Length: 190
Image (cartoon, rainbow, N blue to C red; front, side):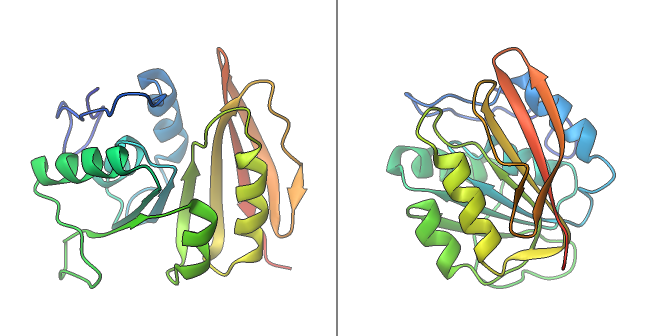
């Protein structure tokens, strides 16, 4: 798999075995939708796998990226991918023009309880058929990490049914690509 556009365009991303990566078609469509919001954004990649989505966000101008996965093979691949791009995880800002990266190797719901940064864009691609998309959406609506007008994007199987509204998160868009769909939720302050 390769980075599609931006600073790291064409760079190869290693994929761990046994995961279902987001297809190039879906990644391209996602970032076309996000093109006016990605520059300078704080980006959270949940169930990150190889980190392809978060890396694509950084390539296209996101200021920070936080990656969460509980699979050690995925975290190992993510760290190799970041290293190949000369991106080093840190817990403090690197200075003007640098990326700030964080990696959490734990269950997504647990990680959400310990993350303190606010995010502009949150992407999650949980395992299909395990109800994790809905559970994570509920957990996101209960924590304090959503920036004003934040977007939460869920990659799900086309047959998965997600609520129209959860807490301050309201569904604003659905896009289908074969068996995959992207569900967009906007954080609306009450």
